[in-house]
Length: 369
Image (cartoon, rainbow, N blue to C red; front, side, top):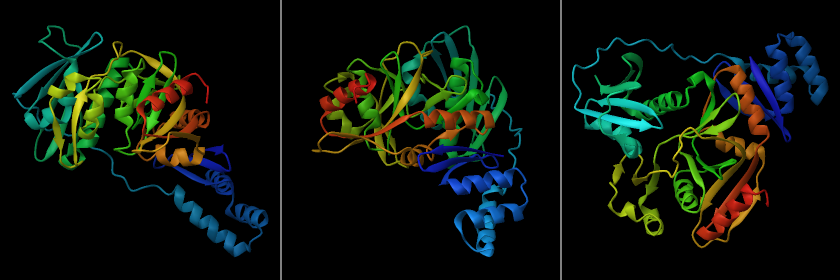
């Protein structure tokens, strides 16, 4: 199965066999559709030969190359693991999100380091009523995750980021009462709200997404989510995710003026990522919030640069958005994603002056740009 959506002069294609999105010429999308509909290859070859005026043999070779996109990938099925849950855990922490209480047992300091720093601001004292009980432990060089004594999954130490993603997915499932299959996608972005709409800020690590988010929330905007931005399929809205905002060391001189508490906040060294961060709680008091989003902004802080904001093509935005995103493998959700993306306005914002950046974002929200 495939889905296609024409964007500008190209076609976006979703390949169901490996949940892959690609950008292709419209003629390629047409051929993929014909192949998926089991149209005889001779008919497709004749169609292509006439369409682009090439010899029959060249058209046939071109179609054979396109057919490779439809081949199944060699992924192995994920098997249930029967590893026993440890009888005792070194750390027990309680977190409260709105009125939902999570008890999380961590086997050791290592497991705590993977999760707790981003959620420390949600920690509460021991609670009598628990809604969800998570257990996180390591066994034979793998990280295991259980919820209410049910096995969720396990990952090697090198795949710890996949575990963190699954943990975060469970948090949004249980906070918003929607299952994983209900979500259209999770985006590596920062989501800002003006209490009516949301804008997603994207960019490579170090470009200033989180710093910009911290500046914006100090100037009247609401932080919906940082780094892990969930969008629900049924309404295509951005939902709140309660993790803290990660602040890199080189952003402290600017942000300390707005958030003096960062001076004494714990510092975390992530050697694999080669970064040192502190965590700033979001200013969001209601983690049930969800807002529509019509704009993507690829943001970048460049010292001593003049502020510039320009529209960028959807194909360019798509190529930057998709690789760092989790997108649902369910066909209905994939179609929703393609429709949602086709309606977005996409921009590139380069800045060095924080106040000018803030004023520009205000204009984006008020549709003055």
